[in-house]
Image 1 (spheres, helix red, strand yellow):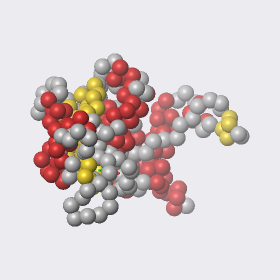
Image 2 (cartoon, rainbow, N blue to C red):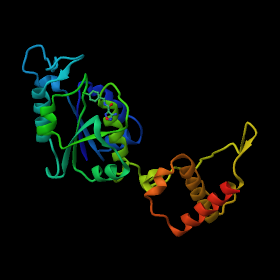
Image 3 (cartoon, rainbow, N blue to C red):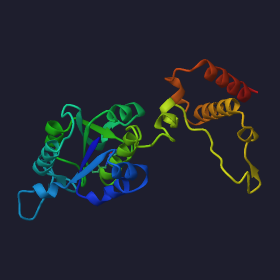
Length: 249
Ligand SMILES: Nc1nonc1C(=O)NCc1ccc(Cl)cc1
């Protein structure tokens, strides 16, 4: 997968291209990255890429031309099939990012992420050169770069070989629509708190059931909304009934 970010702060992306599993996978050429700075497409000597908003108001708006040219430049770099590509703008006005959308994006050959700054970007760029707008949550941060990196990280976990065979994104909590179970490691006792005995039993079937029960228990108490639209397996229904009976007692 080839990911390009259109951004005024290319160096910010080093946190995902140089570190962790995503950094290692990029260095192994499992995925590729390029940053494009719209400032290089400013047609004035001073490199202006923002201007005052029509209609007045506080702050500045990113101008259409430099962004449009940057997106065109990104498209010229596409590898693989041009059809299998998407230009995404990160903003609170976008469709909320979901596990389903992450999976869909992980199938693409090319991804262009437009990262805004200031008060916004000229609407005509969004209308002509952006395929979809995505939000990572109902809050506002200072620019699109951190949201872009969060989207990249979530998507890259589903690109084959990024995680290697040990871990797998399919086992992530949201992969099966439930919250994660609690994790423990040595020492067996910490500040007087022991590790649940079942986890030291070596009985993998019982451990798997305990973990599923913990995931269901957490999901029921912290995010019951996730259970509304989720199809339950017979074992899950049985465990949920057991959990609900306990809380009724
Ligand atoms: N929430 C979010 N989900 O995706 N992006 C966000 C977000 O807050 N972006 C900040 C932002 C976006 C565009 C511009 Cl021009 C300026 C600042």
